[in-house]
Picture 1 (cartoon, rainbow, N blue to C red):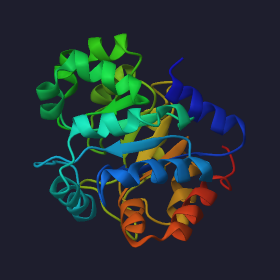
Picture 2: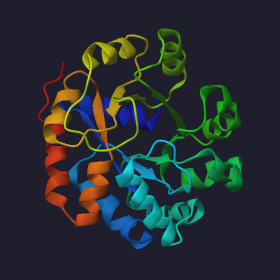
Picture 3: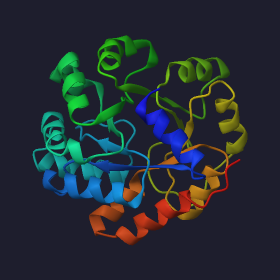
Picture 4: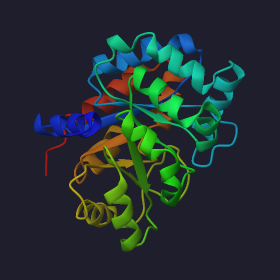
Length: 260
């Protein structure tokens, strides 16, 4: 079983919902990467999604896009991120998930990227601009290195598409909560509980909710009918402000959601 899936299931077995924070590598300088990851690990998060800044993001809202711009201005590259992570990988006890785009991986060299990513503690990869039909470009190399390729499922995905994506996704299913880009929201539309339960009916791989989740109440809401949540913009904003209390409150919320 993949390390990510096992970490999520173990969190559920302990009576909690999985909590995966997203951070932008290089925002504030790569020297912040180690203390940030180790602090999040100390707070008890299940895994960490490490964003790689890119000049042409397709899924990022303003908060994450601006963090990416700051990171790029600091000279952050995919190679530098992996080198930095590798320097303290022995201290990382939870899985890391790289959120990157296809072009940096191709430019790096797929085989070398997979090897270096594994050394850096990366156990999963999300590539939002790579459709499922193109995943053979990277999947064999990732699989050989023991790295999961995580798929996103949107609200507009057809049942046939959902079935294909859930069967292909490794580690967990990244189920998007909104039609649009990332970013904190005050409310969500539609019967999301039924949608998420439909997704879970296709697979025994854990389904996690992401996009727009920004309050402890959101964490509890989505945690009530999923295996856990991914929180991005609120984490990025809180890190930029040095507001660790806000982050800790989000993590604590995931530990108070009753298991279904």
